[in-house]
Length: 145
Image (cartoon, rainbow, N blue to C red; front, side, top):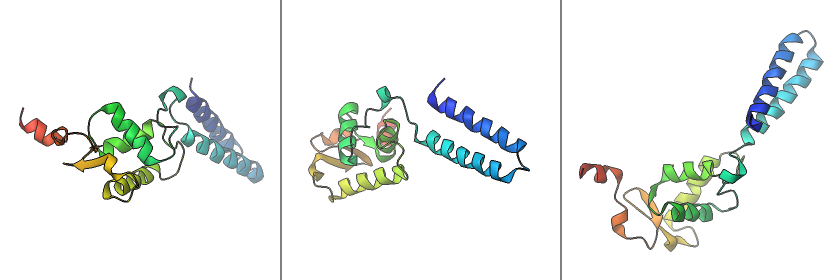
């Protein structure tokens, strides 16, 4: 059983207790507060540490470059965002998908300090030194099959 399962089970027990105490308002409020704490804990639990390959990075650009190095190929923005979140980047932070998206956009637009390290071609994001031929969109690749 995982930590997420344990916390979910505790939350469910709280709901059961709450339904039994409807007539006791102060006790019901205590249980609701406990449920809120459990819900918050559940949302902050990410993958096990061994799967949190991007947790060590503070900046979107660093995590993004690490992912590109790992894959060795250009990826879409959506794929990059999903990979960083699943990889534990800034686990538990609110609006994480938006933060990563803004970081990627900033880096691509030239606002980042290391803009020559990445480029975007055909909707794919990759290392700046990668050959243009690697940036073939999936549609273009599939049309040649």
